[in-house]
Image (cartoon, helix red, strand yellow):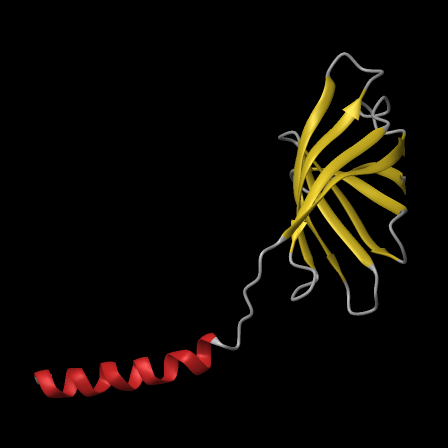
Length: 138
């Protein structure tokens, strides 16, 4: 390719860039601290876990998605608590959906809640269901 052809292609690409980049809105995300759910479950090894406490970070003005991080608190077990990370989003129908990795071997999936409380499923990392739980937003 000649030098002038490269220059023309580069100029064309730069001219289109502002219109493509403006399709995305970038804003400062907000952090919602100390979101708290009461937890009720019979899952072996987790039945003493009574509280899910997370912080959520996201830009809810331009997106419906949140990044979650915190702890599944288990005051009635020797293990104390498990670290949790995951994500949540609000569906087009207004439902709340959340998926968390708990410790290194368990996941929690809560789908299509009409509000901020509802039923969830604990699974191992292979996807095998371990049992249910009910989370109640406080």
